[in-house]
Image 1 (tube, each protein chain N blue to C red):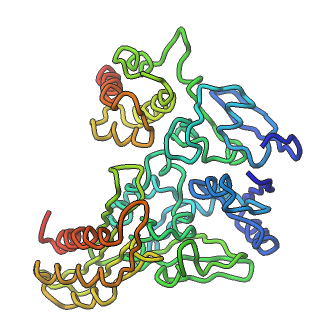
Image 2 (cartoon, rainbow over the protein chains, first blue to last red; image 1 turned 90 degrees about the vertical axis):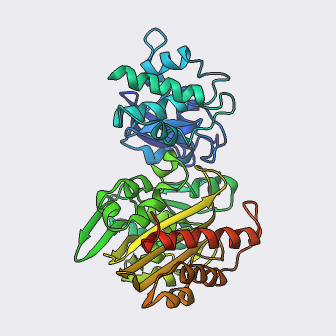
Image 3 (cartoon, each protein chain N blue to C red; image 1 turned 180 degrees about the horizontal axis):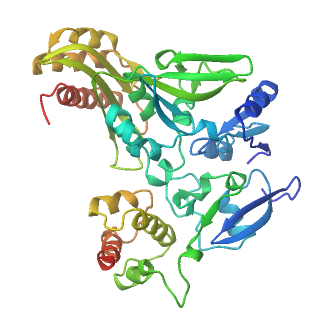
Length: 160
Length: 284
């Protein structure tokens, strides 16, 4: 995947900023975000759409970035975990994950947060079932999900 | 991933021209949820990849002339959340909502679900019970293929290299349709067995029925003998049980990593009996 010939110019908007980057047609959006744009908050997990570690928002919708060819993102808006909050200005969901102990190894966390953020933007007052459905494509092998669900519920309740 | 050229036309005409010239060396990509893992594993090694997501006319869900027209790039999320589909064919929205997880449903498309021709394809099962047709276009013209004639084997269909599936058409069904699947988990799971039914009821009498099964044969299948058993009969629990057993006789399941063949038949019989009873109004 590393031969730099036949590269094609890709234009997209990442975390609100227009980005131009030369990509190989075989590269996935995940690869371009991590290796070319150095946005390594998006994790590479199974690379077949099973684990959700690579979740980003594409046109506001959570998707597996390992299952998007980079060139399919032409002209699209991408939001990664780097766009959700900053170290000194965390998103309410990030604060809630910390307060609730919803992070252990942290590998699923970026994807979990983006799936949760997409849910709350669309549905500010979700039921527990809706929360569990929204994160059902994001696997966590540490927490058993209870604290993650609680962290998301807390943010939803706080908004009322 | 083996090197390929990427082509992303904005119009259907450009896409069809591309396929007429290079179709036999090209693969079509939409949501990529099936194709990208296959490219990565080297199972699929095309010289060209044709992206159809930028062709606006392929994306849309419309009701016109007593039929539903679902564009090939409608995602599972779009289908599951479509008010018109929820009202007119809940079997299809239930199937769409059961696929993978939200991340996959936001990318995967109805066209991909059909063209990939997985025996376990959830939408394909629901669409069989809805007498859906696939509209195939090429530079030479257009043809509509009944979904029952579309699949020829696992991963195999009647689609020619120069053809593109542009739309799925469903005549507005008179009956009540339902879909259920059994997977190994509640989410992110391929079907061990899936069932879809559509019953046209007149009081307690069933006038017409459609029964489809998935993941129990080389392709999703209809069950004509079982459908015949219900025609113009009162849908008693006894008849529905016998019908479910008869339907499973049309299956030819295999043992695989998800389940053994015998389990698919046992579980499919129960699932189908319940779905038939619900569609006939015998249970909530």
